[in-house]
Length: 228
Image 1 (tube, rainbow, N blue to C red):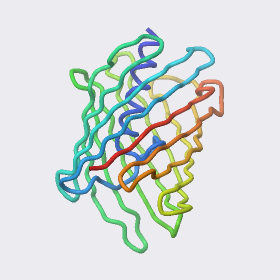
Image 2 (cartoon, rainbow, N blue to C red; image 1 turned 120 degrees about the vertical axis):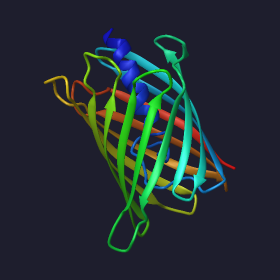
Image 3 (cartoon, one colour; image 1 turned 60 degrees about the vertical axis):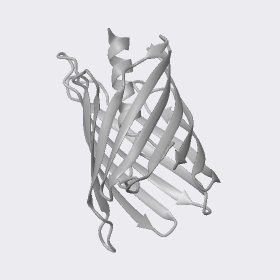
Image 4 (cartoon, rainbow, N blue to C red; image 1 turned 90 degrees about the vertical axis):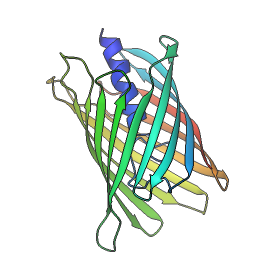
């Protein structure tokens, strides 16, 4: 039962944010897909826990810009380990509430839910560009859909450093507060790169690590993002 809850929660955390966020980050950015355009992502996630073992997921998502301030997304996670099979489609929307100004960040809100379940994630996003450096801050809530698990409060921060027109270094710190438990909160970090292979095609790779015993020992993620 513990592993099922863990996998279910991990699926929401991995796909509710990265479906919108610029890979390989799980911290979301305030930007939306341009009106009338599509963006698809394929991502692989390997997570190793000291006590829960290995979890491997493959995610495919498609986003579409409905207006200049609103986009829609559908994601399909496929579980590879510990049990192979589809884990249910998920849908989400992002609203751009405020555009970035000289002294104020861009502000957006996302809502994401698993189809046929009561699971959902709500996330608030701040994004501020400062030259080649871009900073993202997130604060959200994830409901697992299990009566005995109240859900978690999620928070994270990330930076992107552009070293060229198509190359960037990224890093983030992610944590969550379990509202139904008095145990330590997991804290994990990730370092990665994003490389634009073509104008509308980018490859990414990231390595994550935990800072305490309840965090994943390792996280490895790689993926492709394509716009059209």
